[in-house]
Length: 193
View 1 (cartoon, one colour):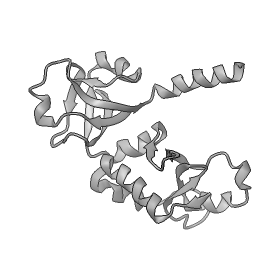
View 2 (cartoon, rainbow, N blue to C red):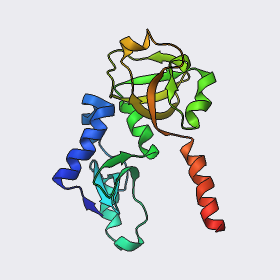
View 3 (tube, helix red, strand yellow):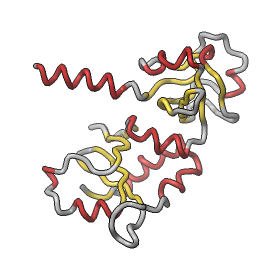
């Protein structure tokens, strides 16, 4: 486990900025409330086995007592680096993105299941959408009861969404909370083999 180098930090922050905008400052400067220390510090980003973790300084200090090969996870895994050096956000960072999201989309109850089965968001399933979304912006997807369901990338701007037909794609799916169940099934199949 080590801190991110300058290049890795830039890549991670660019990806997070796509979803949070200026709220990225809230993530970086978030004070920690974990640990027995009087001043537990702040949250930081750490790299361990190609995965980036969002973890408190207090927990990082305690984790130094664990050997690197035996350390499975620490804090919240927000994403991972591919072999090609690209950074992909994982579903575990949804709570972090949802609280700091710049652009949001709310789904009608009838289209929630479709999104949770890894399908894109269609115009017909759109309940509400925030203003000033541009194509390519990061978008956090919510249910109408403000439960975060996942995130994706805007395919159309807010203005274009008003003129689209109901079967047009509005948000391209990247991750959803249904992944927990899909991944569970895959891991069970691997265990049985």
